[in-house]
Image (cartoon, rainbow, N blue to C red):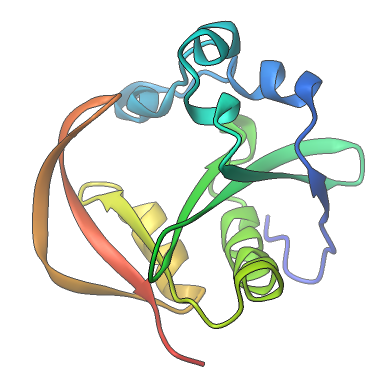
Length: 159
């Protein structure tokens, strides 16, 4: 099923949604994207509890299908995204990514967006490419809160 043509709605992520999202569990190798519980994030002041992050929740009618995060840095905007594990592979990510670009333009002007994605996550890489991002440079090895990995640095192509 494709969501092409479906209009997702979005709003700033609520406290209740932060609890729901951090309980999502992903299958198999995607479990690396499971989140730290929101209570823990609040204690340590990161993720959903970091006031510098701009989180938005996305809905297909009444179903919470995902969220985005925009974090302003000096010269660019870090873009993060999470799709409800029950909705992965349905096309929501691409629509949410395109909307994230529009929201970023309103909030931060012409600062370019970038993201980092694990190189093995072909589904996500394809989604971002379809939404106008390109891989820049060589893959980078880094350690995140979810462990070590090899990532592509992807940037939004100038529009």
